[in-house]
Amino acid sequence: MTVADQGIEREIRSRIRARWPDHGLVGEEYGTEAGHAATRWYIDPIDGTHNFIRGVPLFGTLLAVEHEGEIQVGVISAPVMRERWYAYRGGGAWNVGADGERRIRVSRVGALIDAQLLYGSGRDNVASGLMPGFDALIASCWRERGFGDFWGYALVAEGAAEAMLETGMNAWDLAAPQVLIEEAGGRVTDVNGDRRIDAPSFIGSNGHLHEDILARLRARP
Image (cartoon, rainbow, N blue to C red; front, side, top):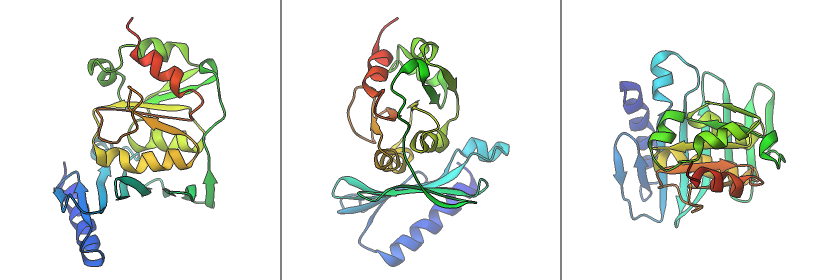
């Protein structure tokens, strides 16, 4: 939590309330308002706060809109990178950057030996106890990197990596990445295969490798 996190979320909440006073709000800094509303906004004012604090440019603002229990729209905005990703149900996934707007899709890689896997914190994934096969999975892929936070999910949606593996998140961290990856043609679940954004684990993949990754993550050494 920083003063910047709080200030950004206050501003976002103020603008939403002014335009849509009957909508619910679920945010990292100020909790839930009108939690039973049919339409709710998920707000992560700075995803990657520790990067922001240390001057690492991989941080962004995440917004998502849920209607009647289904995430309909997601936006990830990375100001220092000057890039934005967005998706909406039935409308695909998109990147907006220096070269303009382009539609993005997940990769077609179908073998783990050819896959690039990403994760937030390998130490946290192992310590959670939710992914006992994490180390073995990582050892079996072509390449692994710890590109955490929103960036990993964006890379999966763009087809630059095949999966992002993470534990210890909250709904506001995952709402926007869920619709982004799904509209890019991928799949997102928790480590047990359940499609949800309120679980303590989150696996976003190109879909082709999803079941294999889940089985390996759950496997005991």
